[in-house]
Length: 169
Image 1 (cartoon, one colour):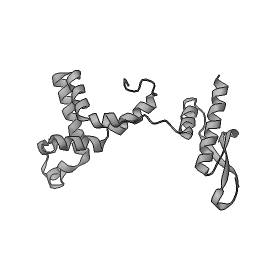
Image 2 (cartoon, helix red, strand yellow):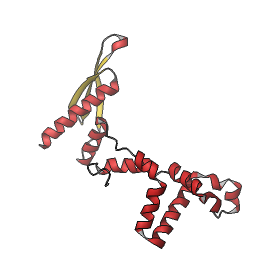
Image 3 (tube, rainbow, N blue to C red):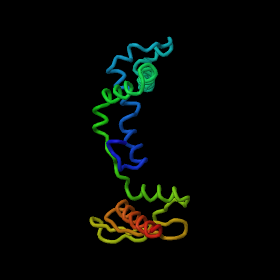
Image 4 (cartoon, rainbow, N blue to C red):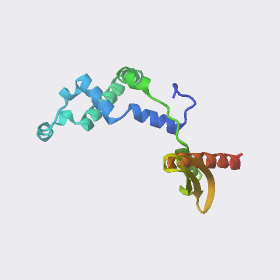
């Protein structure tokens, strides 16, 4: 949060998921040698439990929890920063695309999900142009044009977001 003070809760959550995930934590557990310290039952040993990403990630989290309980927040934070430094530096705050932003805004307002309808296609095959409307319920809320359906949908979502902002303002 300190690194990205203007970021929304959703954007911060997506950035956290980039850093804290099973693959990342399992890799760090291996690098720390936690895999060799796991106390496994006969069945898990037989099934290569030391290599299972889920077990390794859980073990990394357990070590972090033990460190927190034994040495406190500052020590646990220092451990996380040291171990995940490269991932933390590489975390990106991704802007949501217009379709995602529109869906989240409608959901937050308790409204129906948007539906995208292609209303026209024109131009030769190598230079198609699509016209799309975004509907909420039975009402068109925005329209857009683009060289692909996706870009036309994004344009329609931007138009709908602008209309929603105008209604709120």
